Structures are given as C-alpha cells and as structure tokens.
Length: 368
Length: 252
Image (cartoon, rainbow over all chains, first blue to last red; front, side, top):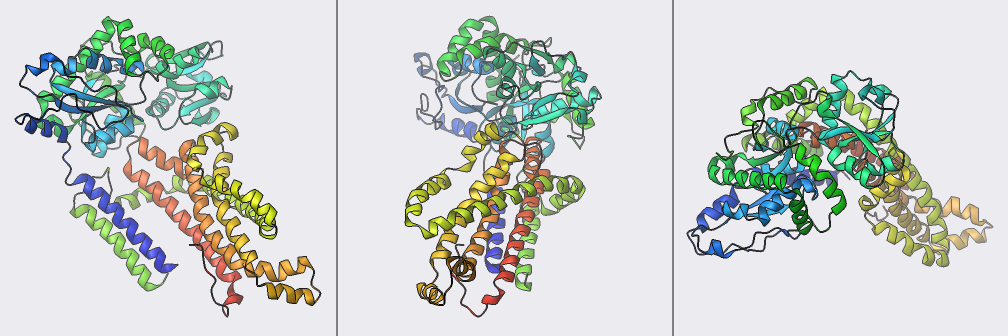
C-alpha cells in the first residue's frame, strides 16, 4: 500500500505541474489572430472553412463581394456565456447580415457553460472572445486571468427575485421565512449576497435551497416559494410554462451594476487591437440591428438555433433589449456602474485586493 | 508511513512549490502549495464545518453499500440461479455513469444529503458484491465437507469457515469502496448542494478563487486518505491471525 500510494502521489503531482506548465508557458493566446495575419500573404482559402466546432451552424459564408477583397477573413471564435438564447441573437444577426464579414472576420460562435468557464477559456486562448458577466470579469482579472472587458452588453443586471404572481412578496424582507431557490454556481449568487447585505436581511431566517441549473422546475413543483435568477431566463420561462410570475429586479433594489460583457484576451488586445475594435464594431451593429428589427432578429435566431425554444426566446427579447439601454452609447462601459460593482465585491469580501478598474474594462476599443 | 515514503512525498511537495515559482505558473492555473496552505489555515473553520456533511454522506453511503453488498452477495454466491438472474442487472447498474444519474436523484430525492448518499452507496456497492461472492466461493470444498462430517450445520460452516475465509477478499473490496464512496459523495455535491467540501470547490471555481478551490480539493484528499487508512487499519487488525497464511489476491 505504501509504495503504491507514493507512486500515485508522484504521478499526480507531476501531472498537475505538467499540465499547468504546458497551459501557461508555450501557448500563444493570440493564436487565431496571428495565424490569420501570416496566412493573408499566402493564398490559402480559409473562408467558408469548416470550423472544428461540431455544434457550429454559424460559420460565415463566402460571398462574391469578398472574393474581390485582397484581405483574408481572420478566423476568430466567440464563446457565449450559456446555451443559445435570444440574448445571443445579435451575434447571429451580425453573422447573417454580414457585419462580421465586413469587419474582415470569420466568426465561430460557441455555446457556453457559464461566465466562469468562458472567462477561463478566453484567458487560456482557446477562444478569442467571450461573453462573461462583469462580476466574473472583475474576479478573474484579480486572480490574474489575462482578460479584459471590451464592451458592456447589459448595463443592468437581469437578476431578480422571482416568485409566483400573488405571492406575499413586495420586497426582499418578505423573503424571511420562505424557501428561496439560489443558483450557487452562478454570479447571481454573489449578487444575492450583496442584496442581502444592502438590505440587512436575516439570512438565517431564509431557507435558502441550492439549485443547480435553474429555478423553474422547483418553483413549478412548489418546492420553493421564490428564487434568485435572471428574469430574462427563468422569469420568462416560468410564464411560458403557464405559471403567472412576478419579479423584483435587483437593479430596482439598489444594485446598479453591469452584467454581461464582451471580453478578449489581453494579449489579443495588445497585438491586434484593430481586429478587436472591428469585432466590437460588428457586434454593436448586430445589437443595434436587433433593437431596430426585433422580429427579424428572432427569425434569424430561430434559424441559427433550431433546438432552442422559439416561444420562450421570442418572449424574452424585449426584456433583453431593455438591458442594453445606455446613455453613453450602446456597449459603453459605465465607470460608475463598474465602480459600484467593485465596491460591492470588496464589501462582501469577494474581492480582497484593490484592483485598478482600467485593467478590467476599456472603452478604447469602441468604434468611433 | 515509513521514512522512504515520507521523503518521497516531501520531495513532491517541494517540487510543486519550487516548480510553480521557478516556471512562473500563473496563480489561476496552479497556485504554489504555500499559498494554498495559508488559505487552508485561514479558512480552517469553514473547511472543518464543511467536512462534516461530506463525511456523513460518505459514511452513510458506505455503510449502505456494505450492508446491501453483503446481503446481495450471499444468495449470489450460493445459488447459480440467483447469480444468473441478478448479476446482469448489477453489472448494468455499475456501468451507468453515476454522474449522469445524479441530476435525476436530485429530482427524486431532493437537495439534502439523500441524493449524495444514494450515489455514494451505488458506486461503492459493486466491488463489495463481487469480492464477497468470490471470497465465499473460494472456500476449499474439502474443508466444507470435513466440517459437515464433523456435524457442523450450514450456519456454523458459514460463520466459522466461509466468512473468515472470505474476509481478505471482503476487506480488499472495502478498501476500494471507501474511495468510491468518497468520489460518489463529491459527485453528488457537484450537481447540487449548498454545503460540503464539493460546495467549497464549486464556490472557489465560480468566484475565481483558485487557492480556495484547491483548499477544498486538498481537504477532500485528506479526508479520503484518512478514511482509507482507517479501513486499512481495520484490515490489519482483523487479519492479524492470518499472518501465517499467504496473502490472498487483492482487487486493487
């Protein structure tokens, strides 16, 4: 037993260090951009290329207009924050309407598994861009993950207290004594802790029940009285499932912080800022088009994500678009909101070190 | 642990600490061991309190696996009919990845300790059955006949001959199963929990607090190793009378 144990420990330690070293040392985070740069002088046709993502239906297609351009399309990828939802419609719109192409980009759009995964994936250079919640960006940068937010998509957080219509809940205090579903793997849990703090709730008096993927089923099954989740997802979904639902957004409870952002690897930004700016520009065009033509955007979404629930996604789009409203301009990162976020996370102990917000987000890559 | 093993382990830990610093491995990939240990000390109250629910899940799951493993193994060992009927079912259950069943258990059994206990028990169960059957069947027929000729009844043969004979096999499986029960409990926690060491690891991951995540990981490892050593000690104690007999084959 002893020898086996020692050998096992040795192997494990070597595997640990070996994998950590290989991830950090040699890999080029900006690989896609670099490859594209160097191949533009060669005649290699990389447009209409089958990307390696098997779930990809969103690969850009060559049009005759591009054949006349000497510029090859740069291959980049975008890792979403979750499974396809209509909050991702603008990216498909940018694809379909050729905005990415006009920006010189061949974009592969990939479904995600949460902000903390997208942040690490972009940090490791496996995807060029990612959709990551602002709170997660903040914590990631503090931890040393090399990413930066280049645009803020949701100016407000969609997190809300969600409950069946008619329930005796008019404010967070009313949650005391009730069963509350919380998504512990989600950034919404951090936001919940902040709200509990701000409103001085007695958390021992609230029966918090940890959920994994969402609060919809437990609420329909009456296992919880209320839940903390995104109103644009779980909130709308409950309505679609036939349950009259109401919600109190955290943004109305004093939590004025940003939510989803677009991030890029810092090395990509350093080595290829024009490409990043072009990408942001194309994405913002996609968002603006979606705001101006929501019905068409929904149709494009259904085409690119045939497995997604069409009714649910159509229902939630207006609420999604509300979140992007900004006085400073679409996609702009609002310094006050980000400062609020940093303050909040510091107060709750999530963020231990002081961090310079200019390393966390930037407005420098916005189109003119 | 003998001195050689201690030196080897110490060597690995030093290699980790030095290697990570010399090679400038980023903190979010692999923090230095010292950072993790400091974090573990700082969070010791939290880690200790979170060990309790995980330990309970492992313990109860393990006990259920032992009990049912044993109860199922006896008829399977002594009846070809039962074996042929039951074994394919057992193998099928064993082969289904429990992590795929975990979300189902959550729906059936709720969000408390129950689904984790169920998964732990389910994973730990199979080696107990297999080894107990093998152990009981490996008894020399001549010894059984000899005891019968001396007037021993089936119960006496079972408790005084077969069971002690099978003990090395059973204990070998018990050592494997305690590790599996630990894996099962953590798997269950990963799918849905608000407490336990799996929860600690999850929070570390979501909060991008790599040191905290590793603190949870190392705590689980320590827990698993401790439990294994307890079972190994039990084995040594129970089998101390066997020192004169050749060691039986182990499943590990």
